[in-house]
Image (cartoon, rainbow, N blue to C red; front, side, top):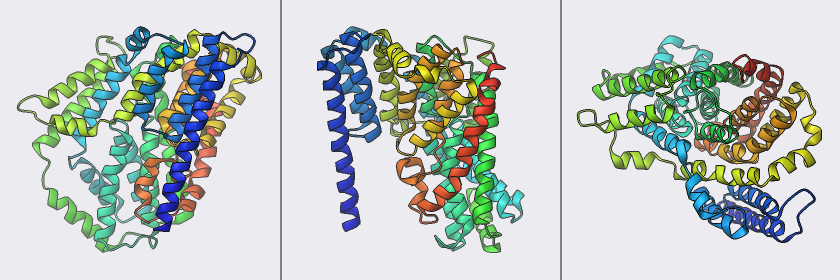
Length: 472
């Protein structure tokens, strides 16, 4: 009871501190005489940007409430007008993320993850390393088309069922430790696979579009895939290196076979789900050459088909339950604040006045610095969308000042927004399996810090040159 009370008190203290800091920044930048080179509207927009960032990071109130409150404050601070706010709210990004939750809602109740897991266990023939690598890559792949939480929920449920059926106790199995660490980390990493894979990517795309840049669906996938696969490999490698998973017992293999036999042959609804999902991804890729097949149009049509009579893969309550309204409203609102910071000239002032020296760095050193700073701060920023909201606009300004790739630097924020694999307590995705008791916070830190630092270095060496091959 005392531990719970301490947790509640800490949470309340964090929220009050966040509220005080947020209001303090907004008031300070509103009433202070503008810094040289800034207008009063520019000063106020910086206060709003900093204040909203603190609200997102500390979760003073639900993110959707924070976004709506910030929007209604803008006209009263002389930064924007209500007509501009409602005109700019939402757009393609809002519709895209909204419809993508339908794909997740259709896949979640199926037995497709169980079938994939059974296949992994069969192919592994009891080799524990193959199981760890298999579950890691399978989770990342599924996370490429559904939300990160849905991906980890599906595979964690399957893995826990196997472990418990074989009476493998928490804290006494390295295989259990490896699986429970790998699944949420892989879901976050796999969220970088495609623009549709995560709301983090959609927010990043929104910032690119506001700055006049765009990236094709297929190009995003081809750029992200090598780094997703490499990160999954490094994560699995260090898990097996540090924790050496034990060979699977005959009991576990029998438990897998029994679970798989219970679900029977693939159902009609599962076939329909697979056909619609695969068709959606193919049409997303085809949109690279046929502009009429925009991502929003394709996913909107896919969700409509799922509701059609005779298909009935979705019901409205099922769909609404899956939608993350915090993320949806953030996608709709975050661009408005950043747009105000840009149109008032504040972003240009921040980059030239405060970050002028950073803009002079070479692509290697700038990517290394940015990657390291975001990866380290990701340990204390609890949500991926907040990472993009904080860093993407600043990096767009740096890219303009340095002549480096805007697309590469913003994609970097999207990658690190999802790839959290060091500290358990600051990432809800990691906490999903932490409660199972199979691993400790120190286990996660020990195995996560090495792939994190290696990927920071690899991206510094290759990311911008690789993105340049696609013309960005």
